[in-house]
Each structure stands twice: as structure tokens, then as C-alpha cells.
Image 1 (cartoon, helix red, strand yellow):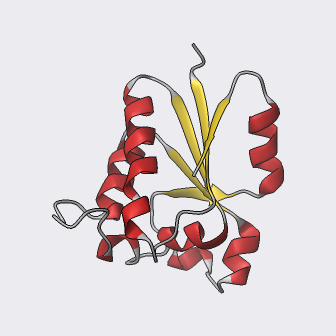
Image 2 (image 1 turned 180 degrees about the vertical axis):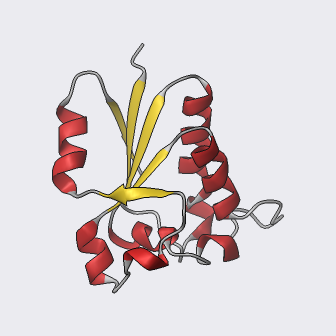
Image 3 (image 1 turned 90 degrees about the vertical axis):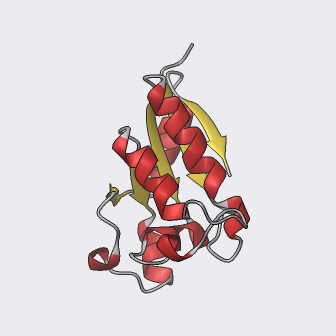
Length: 125
């Protein structure tokens, strides 16, 4: 079994909160199984990294936990979050606006390196 997982959030968007919980829940589950996990945020998913946005949305109607709560669970287990620099520019997001759980900025080349590395498995949302 591989012990490295890379995830791409491409179609996940704060505008569709019902799609936003699962990636973080699964990332946390993998991290709890001692899997190294990195999540790359591209396109509209990058907006989830802006302070306050994920806090205001919930993946289900019961509103027991915000999307940010799921993100925090994953981060506390060691999951790393990387924002796409191009998406940050496209949405006029500066690094100062990002949540503290954001590990850094990494582009497509960093993600492709992970996908092409045989030691890493990948999931795209």
C-alpha cells in the first residue's frame, strides 16, 4: 500500500458547499492511517483557503460542522494545503488573506510531479 496521497481540488467550490466536506474528511481519514497527504487547490477551490469563506459554509443541512471544521481536522492530522498561484492571482487573493492552515503556494508543476511519482496515489475532486 502506498503511504502518500495527493489530492487535487478542481471542481470543488464554495458555491456548492455540499461537495466541500468529502475531500477533507477523506484526507483526514488517510492521514489518520499514517498516509502523507497533500491537497492542491486550483480554480474556484482556492477560494476555500480565504479566511472566513469555509467557516460560513456547511456540507450538509444539519450544519453540525463547517467546511472549515473539516479542513482543520485534516490539517491537525498533518494534511498539507497548497494554493495555486495562478488561481490566487485570478481571484485577487493575496497570501495575507489565506487561512493559517495553508502550507504554501504551489503550481501545476508541483502537482504533476506528485502524480507522476510512483510513490504517490492521486484523487481529483
